[in-house]
Image 1 (cartoon, rainbow, N blue to C red):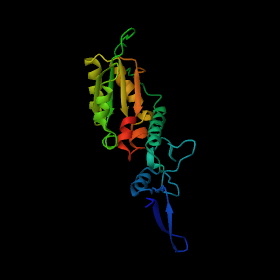
Image 2 (tube, rainbow, N blue to C red):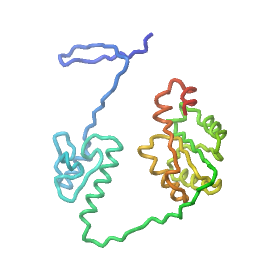
Image 3 (cartoon, helix red, strand yellow):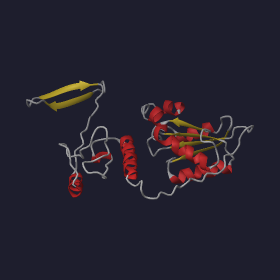
Length: 235
């Protein structure tokens, strides 16, 4: 038994073929929906030959009508990071049309930063289960228990979703309750979530760079699903 994958498919001339592979990557297509066509029709937006909003490569959030911007899969297949960037670009584009209107600057009020100079490290470690994305492979309670034995760590805790609003509030409360001056979060990717936790530190009066992020989803649970004990030790 090789555990290889058998792919059975039809060729262009109608013949059935079967091949064996060690790894198969499925590139699944994405079709435009009727809702896109309906919305485009109401707004008189041009669509391309694939049924998505027609846009320039150098201005992907623009449409054929000035003042109307798009984001996400309305203009074609894309993933979450691209969608978030386009949403931000659409907001910027719309805001640029409002320059003649009075804008009231809203300043975020943050507490005065706590001076921790000379203080011994008081570290809080927060481990995320990420639903089952991490917890299905990594033994999260075991990781929490281990981190509590490390030098300087005064608090260890697990969350189902560390990025949720309730969890952020809980981290904020623990920083104040335990007088934490360092924070470590073990969760998913810092690419999208590190700024979120840094803001939580700022809201608690800590310098945002007193924060460390451990990616135990992509670098532990997802890549070591078949060796759970090793994934836990790595985490």
